[in-house]
Amino acid sequence: MVPRTGPLSASSALFRTSWYQRGKSSDCGVSTGALPAMGGDATSAVGTLGAGPPRSRTSVRDVARRPAVQRLVVGAALTAGAGAALGLGLRGLGRRVQNASDSELDPLLAPATGVSHHHLTTDDGATIHVAEAGAGPPVVLLHGVTLQWSIWNPLFHLLAPQHRVVAWDMRGHGASTHGSRDLTLGAVADDLALILGRLDIHDAVIVGHSMGGMALARFCTDHHRMLHHRCLGLVFLATSAAPVALSTVTGGGAGLIELVNRAVTAGMESPRWSYQWSDNATSALLVRLSFGRHASGAAIEQVRAMLAEVDPRTTASAGRAIALHDVRDDLGHVDVPALVVVGSADLLTPPAHAKGVAAAIPGAQLHVLDGVGHQVMQEAPTRLATLITSVGT
Image 1 (cartoon, rainbow, N blue to C red):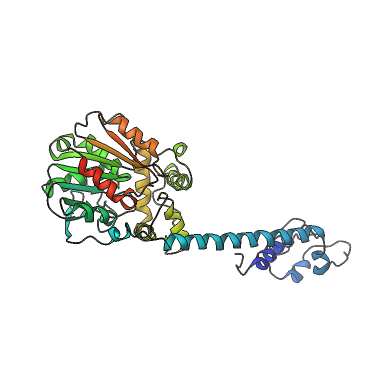
Image 2: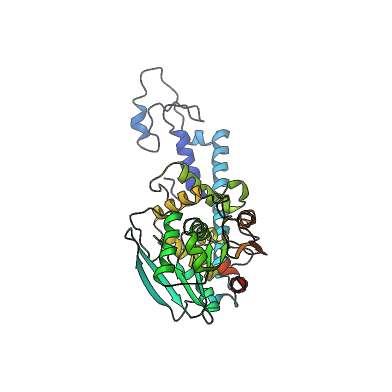
């Protein structure tokens, strides 16, 4: 590994790679057939070059004076220097992202109060953690992959004074466990049906964000009777009715989706790559891609902390479920009011995906929130709360 002690170390390592490249002639014109690949005892290795006419000695100083070597060293130094400058710039940008604040939104990110908790056991042995607060017409909230129920804290603050607000950790996330079933959209849809039944929830507005919205669509197809008798309305939030296609994703979102697609197409049972989502500037910059024009450092930190807790195998299973998702022809029977909400700056599920959801559901209304990214509940909670309470009225 190249020691990271500055441009000179990088240049030196590149020089050594050229000088000791096994089985070839270096840029210096010196045969290196038996020299160590990286470092080693060059003096003893020279003795194994085999018989032949004596060669004139070439000193390291002579080699270093050759134009090809000088160009190599200078180029490596410039590259390393540029990389170091870029790294410093990114760290500075990451710190600014981490320190960003919003006097209106940050108080809504605080933990919800008056919350009671349930732990429901499914038929396949999973434990589903449910949190609820407030009383009144129920609102049920489904989060997306890698998140947890508390991502909805702003909605608890805004809606619980007049509503029964129910949120839960998707299986394999937060305090919910895996059962014998894999993390599929069908399994999550069945968990939603279990919650509505066990907690005796009727006339609910159900909100599904991202993968949670995909699971809500699957609930509509698999539990039509419960949909008709238990649901007042639906909100599909920053989600899609079809597999997320790279052709419709721009910017950093494409890279994130590409990682999922590679995992899926490789048929991985468990991921071979893992990013630890440490509390640093790099993680903050990556999470920032999920947000729109304005992002609070506190909101970004909440998402990062949740990402850091998810088992990579859970993320891989979710990726497979998302890649297989396609309900474009399966929602024509939905007979309750439906809203489709998306941010104009959403890189992960851009407005084109929301339009597809709206087109699949009879009478669905599409709302595009200007400047908002994928994390609508954190970026525009007041606007979202207003839309939720308008469903069915």
